[in-house]
Length: 226
Image 1 (cartoon, rainbow, N blue to C red):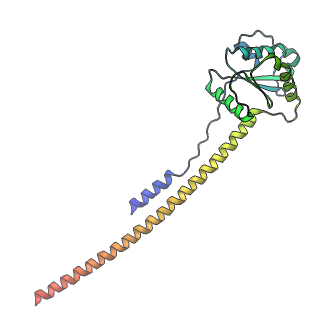
Image 2 (image 1 turned 60 degrees about the horizontal axis):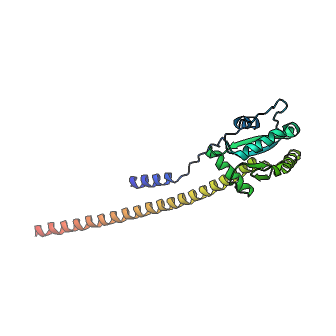
Image 3 (image 1 turned 180 degrees about the vertical axis):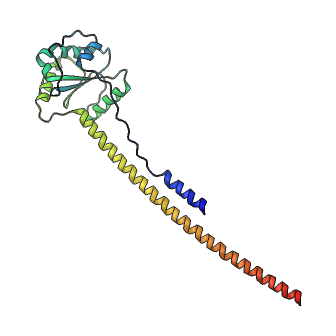
């Protein structure tokens, strides 16, 4: 009986969910100054500084990518006039798998698949690639994001989306675990009832056997006396 209870207890414990908080990934990023240095683009930032009020340009790039370098060169050229409006968060994706996965997630969230670099996000505006013909649109997107009272930050939206997905997955997992535990408890109770019933029947059979044996011995004793 003890073995049965032990087996049931172990089975139940095996299906009790244990929550493990996944660590948030830390992505390697470069600011504009660092990205320009990495691509060996000459620049003078004596009159440029980053602030919390600036619009963020999320730039997914490949180290050595010619078009990425052209885009960085363009940003460098407008720093004097537009530098107060923007700052850059650059993700290298050719040699960094985590950054590459992040670019794919951002593309999926924005509904514009990231199939190459540079992949540029300013607010909710996406530039898949770079050409000089985009320059006016880029400046317009920077100014619009800078002036917006409800600025759109794709990374914050992505984090919110991930949190919601994890919450749904956790609830689903908890519900499944609860169903499993209830079923196991039902099986446990049924097993105990069956064991007790079998033990009762076994005792009754043993009593009958003992009674029959007693009667047999009585008859045998009476026969011997006769």
